[in-house]
Image (cartoon, rainbow, N blue to C red; front, side, top):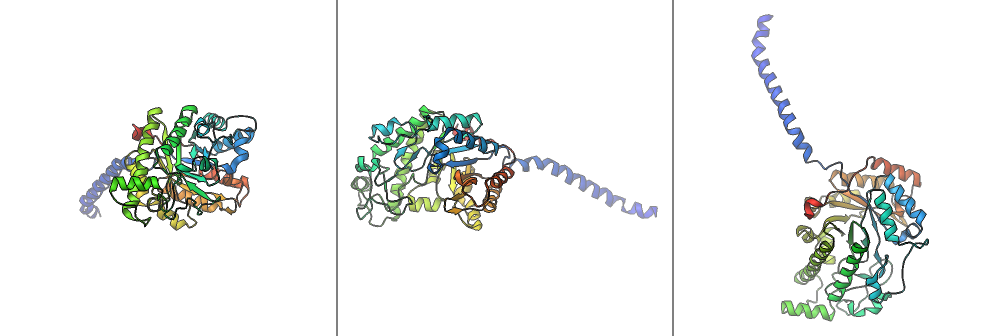
Amino acid sequence: MHSHIWRWKPLSLLLFGLSLLVVITLHAITPATAMVQPPTAQELRGVWVTTNDTDVLVDRPKLHSAIDQLAELNFNTLYPVAWNGGYAFFESGTTRRAGIQHFVRRGIQDYDILAELTAKAHEKGMSVIPWFEFGFMAPATSELATVHSSWLTQKRNGSRIDTSREGGDMVWLNPYKPEVQQFITQMLLEVISRYDVDGVQFDDHFILPVEFGYDSYTRELYKTETDKDVPNAPHNPDWVKWRADKLSAFVKTLNADLKARRRNIVFSIAPNPYDFAYEGQLQDWLTWVRQGWVDELIVQIYRNNLGDFRHQLHAPSIREAQQKIPTAAGILTGLRNIPVPFSFIESKVKAARASGLGMTFFFYESLWDDAPEPADTRQASFRHLFATPTQRNSYQAEAG
């Protein structure tokens, strides 16, 4: 018996040594492995507050209650609408000087909505990034469109009307005209100068639909710069790139102007997925990210199929962006006539989180009011999803 044990002793010593080596090796590499995981202490959890939420925005008790509720559920960012329908939802000297006089939005207790919301949200530790929802778009009947008709662009057939948008006929400001660029720039500078906000945001209306750009100003500019006539085909690759590059040049200048006024201001964008944004909307947001002209990206992934949603999460453009700046998925929580079950919302949140992305929800009222489940059930479900508080991602490393 003893001789049998002795015969296996060298093998036992060898196995013990190998086991010890494995333990030491695993112990050594575990911290490195943990370092590449998404930091649990930082996750963007935002919500867009729209003009659909008029009662919430204009009634101080309701506004305070909403912010208290969101903070208690560990949301950390609000995107309140600041530019919609051709009107500013803040006290704007820029729009008044532009002849837009007939709309000043204040709370029913006579308070400045953006100032009130910002102060209350900051009190609760939440960031506020005003959302310039309409970008270059305006209703065809708005003061902006009628007073400044020379600012508008058009299709190849001469029509200025875009009938493809919800909410009626729309028109598009020409993003290449100096007057339009100055108007947009001054409006943003006014917001970051007058209000203690943390940033500004544009979405999928800070674009030019590919069918537009056939106005005389743009035609002449294209002819001057390329010595060619504007192509008849809106999707002509050279024509697409020229217009997209022009918009990118404005983004570069706009970002520089904002940072000159307030160095740490967050310039956020919330576009459509990249291929459609570039080819259909002339919005080359991946170049903006690569060049350091934006500080935060929220891609609107409003898919009604979970497989499609997950596919977009892994798009090369999103993967590249999240290596450079805080990146999140825009998640639809419902529309007035299209409620979204919470189980679907939860699946999207988990998929985004597994991909290392934050999340921002469209829109506040559909979080739990206009929803298929009772409000308290939805709130309890969000509490489960966001069980612990998190900070927003740090921008200083990239913004320098």
